[in-house]
Image (cartoon, rainbow, N blue to C red):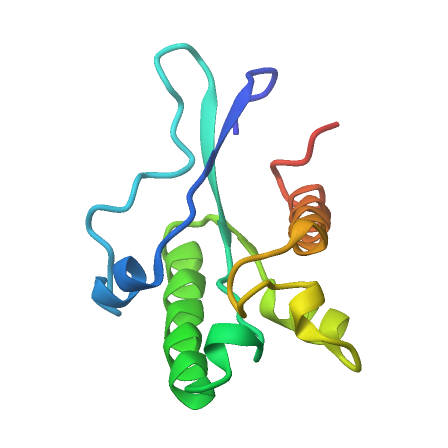
Length: 137
């Protein structure tokens, strides 16, 4: 990153169908990271791991849902490695947070966060980003 220049952080949320349609080996249309724009701002990408809990819509076909989300998790992790993006793991945080309590407290239907689920994502995001080259000092 350029010293003294502002950093624009790109945040993208992927739908499961989009992730599963990407080739596992590459994503040729993925935006470049680590670039310097014409205004002198550096650009960086932060990728958040998809997550799921067994509640609501996901309960009936849990194994199928979990397999699909695990595929998505692998793709996002691979994209982060391939494009030197900051990777924010979230599945373990949701698993740990929901242990011994109703998963619907965190995710309404197994995939969409409640207000406290969004807070968990924000805290994990800040923890990872603040310990990366993108840290706000």
